[in-house]
Image 1 (cartoon, rainbow, N blue to C red):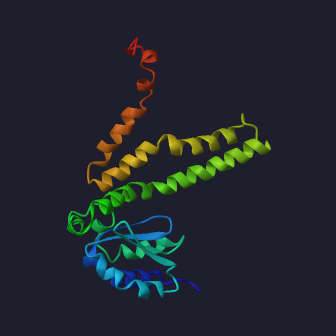
Image 2: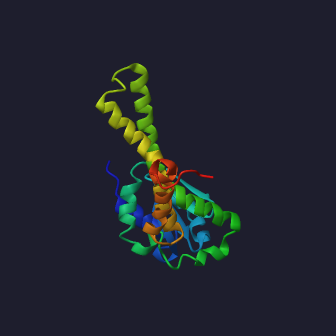
Image 3: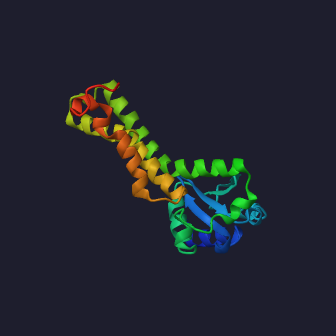
Length: 208
């Protein structure tokens, strides 16, 4: 039976206190993650949210209210964005400071860390899975390591980790509400080839 994601989004939003109680919401691979102005309202409705057949679990962790939907979470999130202000779904809500008054320093720290790394998890998963595939191919000898297919697959695997600083920089820009492109300039500087080998660039003879 097909799930009614519009009904799911509407029901969950109502249970967490409505759009006016949402400071920020985003999703990871399986969960809707709410940063709420008053999390106590949502805590009172945990049982009713869990009672829904299309909800796997509800987790309150590090000051964040998390509703576990499963791999179809993006569909529920798409419906949720129709009911919540766009500024509350991309980490750029200017009124998100309000709930900070009710959170401990520890909660705020873990919320920041979670906000930075959660969006990057799919990149790590994809690169990790490609790395596993490359390893299997290499060990079984299905394709020569000099083959163009192996070469391309290996690039996909390594690119996710090599350019990871860019993904983290973009995520940090959302969390700290700063310019995304300026944030990405920092890893661009760090990964610039000539910085790794200034002597080869011909501009610097010695590092000391």
